[in-house]
Image (cartoon, rainbow, N blue to C red; front, side):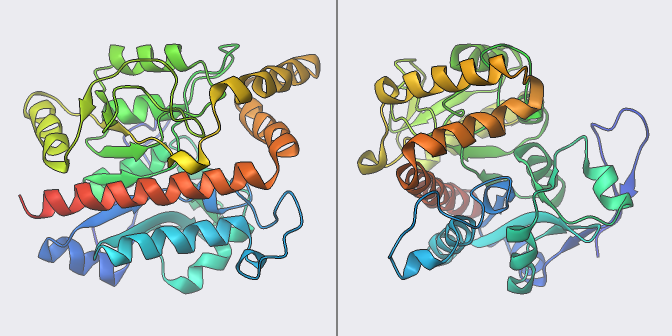
Length: 324
């Protein structure tokens, strides 16, 4: 069992708690086996949830979207011989690596534990999924260099909220593999904020920054084509300063929903939310809810596809780290 860890971004008080490592994760870290950290919000009720927007007759899709996503991501990593280190809080216990018996708790909870909520989740013995920010912190503290996620949070279009993902990426020395930033954010402002904090944003085999469901935003970013190039970027940065790298991976082409189609829906959602007086962190789930009401299962399948693709790329990066 590792020593208690103190939460670095806690400003009011310093909380100390034990982080439990799954035995398979302990073994992988001890032997140098490739390991990828996973945040877990996408698998819970605050993410993809347990029900599809539309009825489906597919036998496999009798699984809820969140469950299907986790199974596909874990399978993708296992096929590459990479250990999946799913992060979560289970009944007040902070865990890196979950046993299959814990999965059902993740699917059922709507609680999220970002960096500012970890202390409450532990004190109140809650079950909560981890956001990108808390998963990045746990990855760094346990020695995991790569995180696979869906899309990062950022700055809302009305600038009423700024995700803790931004500061976490600037603080923790982990390569975050994601489909860029979420599509409904102020994409330019989010990239500027990351750049100002010294977070390299690099495109995986693309110089056109992707944004969640959309392969192209028209925003140019540096391109890398190999895992070795990613490692070189990370090591160059870590030689001088701490902090993460965002590796932006385009969604597979067959699941791409172009911005030309998405943007009018996002604009409608923002107008609806503005009219109801919703601001701050409550905006994101409302925008997603609106988008799902219009695009239905198509949106969910795109989310599944990008999560699986990100896991595939993260495995490649983790294997390269393990062999260098």
